[in-house]
Amino acid sequence: MREIVVISGKGGTGKTSVCASLAHLAQNKVVCDLDVDAPDMHILLDPQVHTREAFVSGNEAVIDRDACRRCGICFEHCRFDAVKKDGDAYGIDPLRCEGCGVCVALCPAKAIAFPEKECGEWYVSDTRFGPFVHAQLYPGQENSGRLVTLLKQQARELAKRQGLDLVICDGSPGVGCPVISSLSGASLAVAVVEPTPSGRHDFERVAALCDHFRIPVAVLINKADLNHEEVQAITRLADDKGYTVVGALPFDPAVTGAMIRRKALTETEIRTLPDGAKLMTFEVGIRFLADYLNGDVYFKTKYPQHNLDRARNQFHLVAEMEAKRDETQAVVDAYL
Image (tube, rainbow, N blue to C red):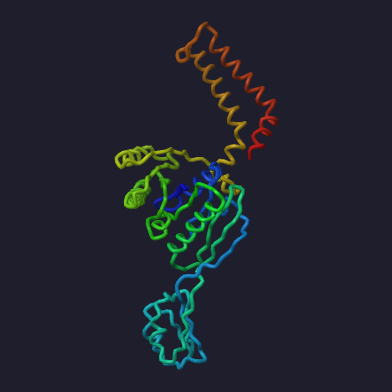
């Protein structure tokens, strides 16, 4: 089984958009969103949840006020200011409690319980791209690395049960614990990089992490037309380290448009295929015409008006394509 993890050294590079497009194009796969602290793949995939499970990790102190003697020992020894005093009573602030258990150990009345804590939820869903494993960590909760590991296990088991040979993961940004968990067992890391000095620096860090775990790195430079010098610097860095630069994507408002429509970019691209074919044909006609007006200096010709005839043929083809626009669109829509 192959496992591709799409990563980035920082947030906002376009990692999720790239991952959603891969999920749209790939066959026989399970999609997994490992960015459990701030998941957003579900926005593009519109999942239909059929399995919902609680994620339980760690413990949280709870004071039984009826059994509490109001001695204040827990209040004095809590280093995280999680014990709050309300008059002569004491309580636990769940957002501050780190689950260290000091208050539980020191309470002379044994009035502090220490139950397991529900930190979030994880889901298995159906989408138009196939099965989808994802989660949501509750605000302020920790152990995201453990939840990422759980999701990867569930995705692999689901792929095995359904006879699928590929898991595509939207990894967490950065280089922290969730990223290390995301990369565990991966066949390939696809690093989405912005062509800025900070983007290049963040890429170096996450690529070094991949090197440490001996995971091959493929580099995809996003918004590459905004800073050509940084694109060259990133390409040189990739060449020096032996990484493969698989592409450079220009900045395009179509990406934002696809997100607004809650679609993968490749879904939008397929729908515009008839327009793209017509535009390319028209562009070639313009090039033939321009070369004819410039004295036939670029394209090889066999007679004086050869380029002019070529241009006329292209423009005639554009007119025919426009006349059959609805038929062409119907053919494309059949594959959506």
